[in-house]
Length: 152
Image 1 (spheres, helix red, strand yellow):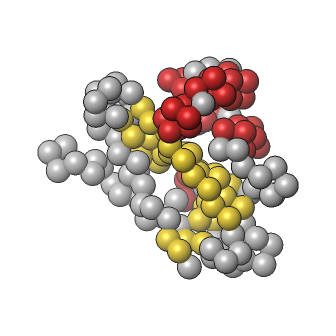
Image 2 (cartoon, rainbow, N blue to C red):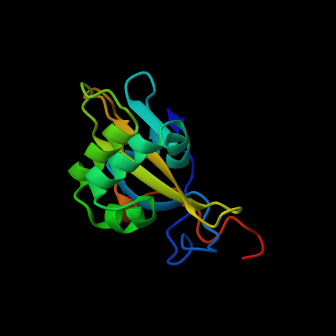
């Protein structure tokens, strides 16, 4: 089993301008703490890298799927139906559409230079024969409580 990166527990205001979020859990759905890499599939990318590679496409994905920009993404992803988030992530991450994607996780980090949020987008496909256990936001295990930064 391969473990996923530990996320900070959600803290209100920590992802806002001048916040100190570092890989803070925004939302997850049917996402593992550890998975079987020989069976399950995981893809991930920071949204700012996607925007650097093809800004027009990134803007289109945000507008088409969320009705907002990357700055309004947190509010959308926290309220949207899970299936709509998965559809957005498939498009944004250029994921294989023939794969049955079963879960996702979105983490947020405040860029220390710009004070803008960076969204870490993760898409997960649990294989039917996998014994991987999956979790939602409410029961996500292995979270770091509080800030990763010592002075907060």
